[in-house]
Amino acid sequence: MLLLELSGSFLIGAGYNETIEKMTQADGILLGFPVYTANISANMQVLLERASVVTDMNRRDNLLQHKAGAAVTAARRGGALHTLDAMNHFSCCRGCI
Image 1 (spheres, rainbow, N blue to C red):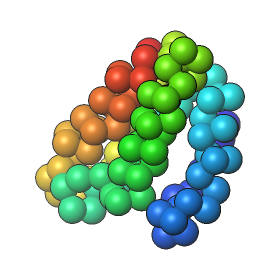
Image 2 (cartoon, rainbow, N blue to C red; image 1 turned 45 degrees about the vertical axis):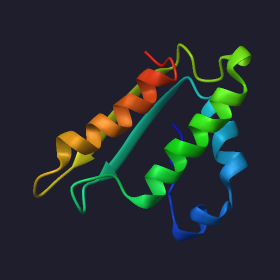
Image 3 (cartoon, rainbow, N blue to C red; image 1 turned 120 degrees about the vertical axis):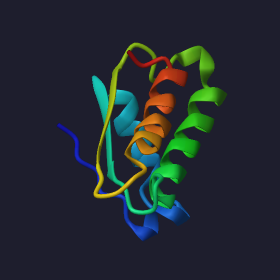
Image 4 (cartoon, rainbow, N blue to C red; image 1 turned 180 degrees about the horizontal axis):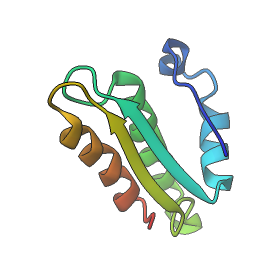
């Protein structure tokens, strides 16, 4: 099991390459994030967008295709469905099952 903590330094690229490498080597990807303001956080958005660019630029390699993909969230107020939708769309668009 691989657990990654997204911190403020992730926004400026620290550990980004290592994170994508671990994602491509994993059997599955479980995205999880709490809902703070009815959406995913900036850190999660950065991860999803950067990983999308990497997989798009390496489309022939099918980096994430056929990996198990899922999303979980915890919410106290509204926004849980939107948050899950954003993370699940990443998995679906990258070919995860």
